[in-house]
Image (cartoon, rainbow, N blue to C red; front, side, top):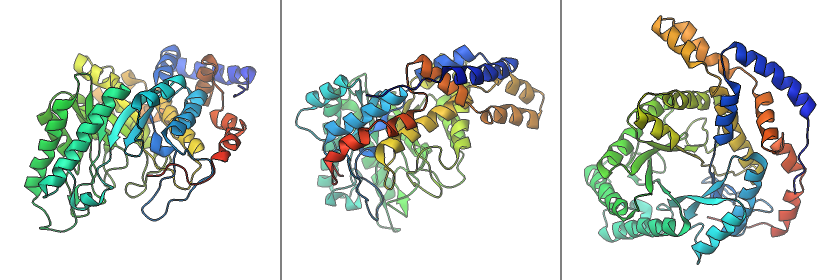
Length: 415
């Protein structure tokens, strides 16, 4: 469907200059290119459908009407970028009668079903909590849903189950905080025991919202503590939009890697709180510094640390409300790729030497300098080597796919 525009002459000239610059800095570009080609970013099924803020969901023409069409759209993103071979599903938003059929459809498109995400925040019963509700019957219902998602993961071949809980309270005295903590652990222990040895439980946290007095899993320390109690198949999932302003996310990332408990990311961006904006759109330097910590740890002498880095699940978690869905997802994965490429250009030996000498500005400069390079020639070069469009966004916008799916009309699959 997509015709790949070849601009070899222009790319070759730009890349030759870029290569000369990086060789002078001691960077092995062939190694960098291999790491870039290995980068994989999971996209979320809900990012292709009508979804949005608490105030209004603006329906778009051509959005998917069912989970199968979500995978059709996700396949376009992967075909154009080579970055997104798996798609996370959310239950019950993506509930189907036959998960084997959904898996087969995904595989026919060159995709896999990725993380399974339980939904424990939309039902009336969960107004005062799901697994932490004071009502034992509601806790049982919520736990049964977690077990259902484990069964779905077995059918779809999914290895990761991503958990986020809206559970919390709005007022002092509304709930018994310590009892809620224990109920959370009881539910997740039952779920943990139902998983296969190949599965991982990725525990997400959020500083506030929709609960405003306390959130049962409010920060990385609580998620980390819970994962430690559950066992080695439980790890922490860092959502880049789930922190208070000023939080040093790359510090959290480094700490969790060193403890061998960083399981994955939900990439998005925020200006004030959990804005669900396109990753890298507000503070790309933060994303770059996160990758700096990850790539630095990838050189660690500890095999356990390296293994943690090699098994990080990179996932997008965004609900595009005013944006067109497929272009927004393209922009999301391409922004991640760009900052990853820049982080690969950091000369870690130069940083370490400056650190050893107590050269504060020299160390900072060695980290920052790679961020300031234009990596466009590098990205163009690897896309050509992979047989991908040099400009994925332009190729999509001129492909006619948006016109093809317009026959779906408005009012597709909703939450």
